[in-house]
Image 1 (cartoon, rainbow, N blue to C red):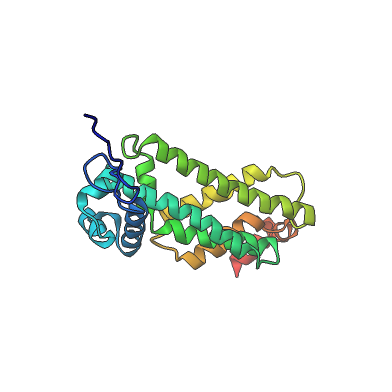
Image 2 (image 1 turned 60 degrees about the vertical axis):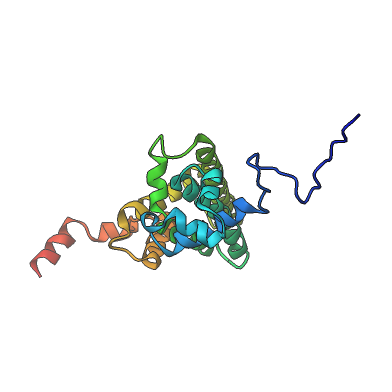
Length: 227
């Protein structure tokens, strides 16, 4: 006597190895719910139970997809970073000058990272994130750097940026300025003011014109001091 083996139909076939049917787009639903909650509140105030409830799944389902809240948060930030770059590219299409382009990049990036400082603290903790997530972020960050250097390269061709500069180093310099503002300057600077200052320093520098410094030599300063 032979026993015929029945194959489960695709609609009910078990895929998670735990006796339950796989939930369609489970990871995507969890990520979307997490991104919404992290946008509403600080990282420390968001609970995994809330993420699960908003996604309509059990808490265990969240932990089967992400081993910790830190890993879930990082995945949400990295996904948002990719979306940020898409938004920047769309916004750049409406810019008419290099100054507008740089200001647009700075504005979008500063606003995005301003509320995500815990993520960068996690990057400095070797045990907080798995290597795969760090690589994903580095790849996204390098893509943003290439976007900036591409804007500068085009500016050189149009004569709006002086020739001879290493646009890759210039792009890294701009990213460094934004990182410094987000890390140390948010308590005394608004996002709009930071955009103006970073754009101005990056494109114009701080130095006054040479003739102005000559006019304000030692004699001029001594006269001004007596007034």
